[in-house]
Length: 163
Image (spheres, rainbow, N blue to C red):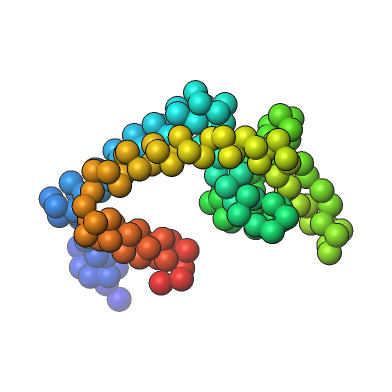
């Protein structure tokens, strides 16, 4: 058997990005960084909330009883369980959420949006939505919004393994 690396045909060349793909990729990276920074700054300035805290509160506010198991909240907020635990602890110190034992499962922990937390997100939401609208939807046509939505749904499904 010949093991000379010069004759190894099993190695494949990387599939490099085309010039167009590279331009799209770099624009995507720039946009996500700039967009997240803008939204985070506005939330901190206007509501003393980080974007991560706001997303946690959105997820909780959209459920019955404003509560979710910590594991489900981590999945919904696309956060590691460790990072979520630290963020929730800071929010708990500020009275925005509280943790409770899960009544169905002694090992489970629920994160519950407090009344103060719900009032905080109600105050923060209008400006946050305005920032999203100004930054994304006001600069795109309706067909561009549809294309962006289709593309994002496909990418999300691929990342979540549901494609």
